[in-house]
Image (cartoon, rainbow, N blue to C red; front, side, top):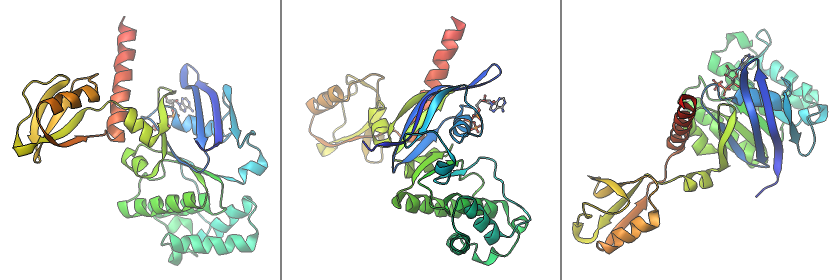
Length: 310
Ligand code: ATP
């Protein structure tokens, strides 16, 4: 396991009676693309704002590379906030260069990088136009460039894809991968779970201000109980109508899709299937991240409802 770039330990933040963040601990591995996921109002933005020292946490510890955020570290951390904000009357290249100088990039180098980034994002022709003249999506790309321009070691992106068309989402995804390959650790807070699944190597799911699961994407998907398997038998034989651990079967796309009973052991199911004939196909359908997300959140909400009712 890679060492952690960012440690968050028992973070808590309330707004009046609302516990927006209620004891969240995170370890963001150095060099990872880390998906910070959760439904609306689950506390993602509040957590990120505490990490960036924009709001003060009620409790907890936040350490970057072993120390609290300071001026020097800020020059190594990029942040794309949920609410975008650029100087509307400033020209695009000028603005990017100015923002980079605030992060200690020398003026000449900042200008060179500003133009290169605008080219890279397809905005080369707009470099001398004021931000005001750009569409919302284009402004978002400029802000995205500003987040990476000073070559930070850690970048936090809060909903970077919202409002972008699929082509631009793809461009942003490519930039995220390139920057990660350069060695930048990236925290990606998003509702777009399919995007998170394409990009992230580790994920964390929060709900109601608490962490409900985290780990490498691989481990999260492997640990989640299987809901179904696909099988086929030699000679097109049908699986027996009743098999232990199997709730339902349907023939689909040249094979049988068997829905597992909740809590069924995959090993026991495989043994029972083998005993019934010669298998030519046995494939586990690993759940997608959004299925895991929905299942975990629904389960937790149902349990909370039961608790409240009892
Ligand atoms: P979304 O995905 O919708 O942006 P989120 O996961 O980022 O949501 P937060 O914005 O952190 O969630 O909100 C967590 C909780 O804290 C919500 O119940 C929200 O209403 C509340 N909250 C957030 N900011 C404030 C504030 N400034 N004052 C009062 N309550 C707030």
